[in-house]
Amino acid sequence: MGLSALEMLVSLAFGYLCGTIPFGLILTKSAGLGDIRTIGSGNIGATNVLRTGNKKVAALTLILDALKGTVPALVMGWLYAPQAAILAGLAAFFGHLFPMWLGFKGGKGVATSVGVLFGLFWPLGLIFIAVWIVMALVFRISSLSALTASLISPFSAYLLGRGDLTLPAAVMAIMVFITHRTNIARILNGEEPRIGKSKPL
Image 1 (spheres, rainbow, N blue to C red):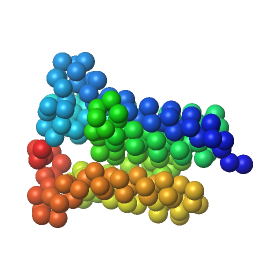
Image 2: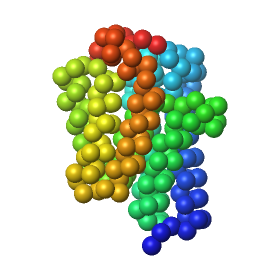
Image 3: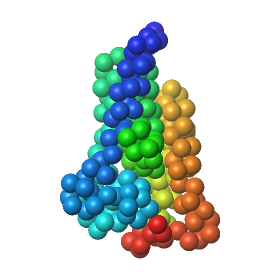
């Protein structure tokens, strides 16, 4: 049985609003670190928060950005149906990328996409993290690790018998590639710094 129009609207609205919460901006200001949008790349995600030098705030930003993808998926899935979970998760992901409160300029989506995967089907989240860790250990490039893990997610969903999650995972992967287009250019040019070294802005 499909979702009603109201259920779809509630799922999308709840997911998007959760996704728009700019934890990176809120936490850095609360910690007296200034406006994260004026630091480094200006991105509100955990990677840029780390440029403030406060690892605890960066780690908390990472966790909260992931949770704002997990929570909507779990809540709407419990309240309505699996389809509602998918809608809420995707809406949260896009809310993080395009928060209306910040002129639709948000983060790059990696942490939130992982959170969505955990909320929809936790093995996908674990596979993402496992791939990220392996790639990071081998190549020492954070963006390459995230891109590879994102690329593998749709195939993982299909191979694990969750064909219903293949398209959502693919959509998030495509958007992650788009938001990382400057990183991809640096990777291809051999200019992307390795983990532990300073990154280009």
